[in-house]
Structure formats: C-alpha cells, structure tokens
Image (cartoon, rainbow, N blue to C red; front, side):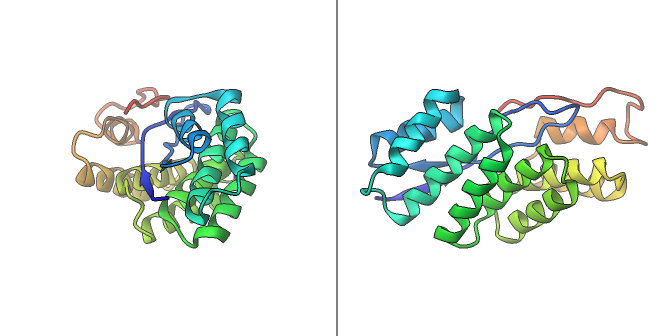
Length: 194
C-alpha cells in the first residue's frame, strides 16, 4: 500500500489559541481510509472505531500503520485524550522514523496539555524534518512562542508562515494581534479554516 502525507487544517479550540493539525492519507484499507477521512473532516468516536479496526488488521503495511496511528492521534486530540494521542504519535515515530507531520501533531498534544516548551521542541522538529505544510509548523511554533511571551520569535514565525503561504489568515491575524501589531488589544483568533 502506498501512503501519502496530506496536511489539512483541522481545528480544535483550546482557549484563545488554536494549533493546526496534519492528517495522513492511507490508501488500500477501507477502515484506514475511513480513519483518515475522520481525522481530516472530523469523525469523533466513529472515526476512532475505524482507526481501531484498521490497526487490528494485519494487512496494513508498516507505513500505513504509522499513518493510521497519526490519524487516530488527531482524533484523540479532538476528544482531549491527549495522553493517548501522544502514545499513538510516539508509536508512529517508532514505526516510521522522524516525520514532520508526526512531530507537528505531537506538538499539538503537548500544546493542549499546556506543556508549551515540549510543544515548541516538537514544532521545531517538524520544521527541521520539513513538514509537508511547513507554514503550519511555523504558525504553531509562533503560537507556542507567544504563550511563552517571546513575541519577537512569534512574530518571526508568523512572518515565515506568511512567506511560505501568502494570505494564510491565521498567521496574518496572529501577527496583527501581537503586542505592537496593527490592532493593539484585538482579540486572538480562536479558529482557522482550511
């Protein structure tokens, strides 16, 4: 089976900041495909059940198993079951080796747990390992820097996200909302759409 990584904007509101996720496409296994679609478009418990069925299958290749673990981890993050999500992302890393998409999603789990320094480290790894949607990794790292009060670093990452994807609304809104931005006191965006 062939596996492709496809990054999409999938949102989970967490306070005033919203990290962005990357889902992994899996072809060939119906349950794994349903799992991917659920991670990409939102599928809740039914999507997780599809992931569980796919992972019980011995027909999945090592790469597809890793992608399915990533997708289930995204669904677990949406349910705020972040410790289980981190277990899935760690298992996916053991199967596939370093991956920008996996680090990006594990970073989101750490962000949700309010382990901002761990999230920052994972977002930096996502950048180093050239996540397919690099602008999302920079944007999410900018969010982590902002939470830590490192506004100059946040500004650089939001600007880099805009350089990589001109018109990326969440980065533009976050840049404007930073102290010294064009609209001081403007509320932080809580959602981005893809």
